[in-house]
Structure formats: structure tokens, C-alpha cells
Length: 197
Image (cartoon, rainbow, N blue to C red; front, side, top):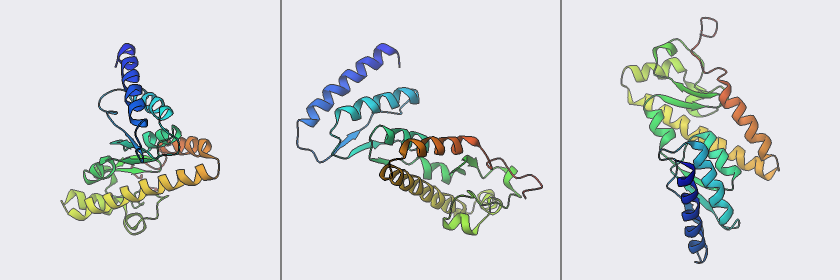
């Protein structure tokens, strides 16, 4: 989106917010974002939108699902989200973890005995290895998709619970920074070597 189009979008969204806040709604949703424009522009529009909406009413961002995008939106005052991305990707073998995403169906994980996410205590991570879940995907066994999806939901719920706790404790900025550093570190994401298998 060009700068001039972004300015037009901000103005239109501001007019919409003004009309909506004049009505006695219980909450507000934000949409039309993350449909091709760079993430930085979407975050700027979310920040502009939430600044115009009442802070004492829920603000819901539709269709946004990466952990980093969610936490950035929380920093701008968004309260609720929905998105198919975590489970849709999990069903195809791409799993979100606290250290980034892994494509567990890749052959490189065939002998990786670590859990999907060592920081997770979901059923899939407590009981099954990356190698086993990779085997399920390789053989077309639906259990692979189910375990990956179960982990995806547990991961997202845990992340948002941690965000809420950080807000309550007055340390959201630190939590957000720490999460981003850990998530983008890639530590433990790469397939196992002989030493870790």
C-alpha cells in the first residue's frame, strides 16, 4: 500500500470508528487487515483504530493468527482474536512452537526424539516425539494432524494467557520483548543431529 493509500485508509477507518462509537455497541471488531499489505502497515492501522475505540469495551481483531502479530495487536489494545492459521498450518505439518515454527512432516525430523515444543505441556508434547508425529504425517495417518492441531491450540491459548498475566502484573512490554526474542531465536527448531536424536 502506498503512503497516500495508507493515509486514505486511516481516514476512512477513522470515519467508520466515529460512526460506530456513536452507537451503543458492547464491543468493536477490526477487519480488512492482513490481506496482502505489509505487516507494519497492518499494525499501524490497528494502532490507529484502537486509539479511536473506547478502551472500556472489547476490541476484536478478525483473522489474524501469528503469535507475533497477536502480541503486537495486544500492545495496541486489542482484546480478542480468531484465525484458522495455527490449526490450518498444523494440519499441513507446520507447527508453531515457543522457538519458532517447524515443518514436522519434513524427513529431517525422522529421528528427532524431542517433543514438538520443549516448553509445552500439552498432550502431544508430553507423549509423542517429533519423529513419531512426522511418521504419522508420512503415512497419512490422521492422528498426526490431530496431534499437531492439539498442540497449536494449546500453544496459542498458553501464549495469550501469559500475555494476560503480564498485563495484570504490569510487565507486558518485557513479556512481549522476551517472547519475540525466544520465538525468533530458532533455538531447538532445527532437526535433531545425532547428538540430540
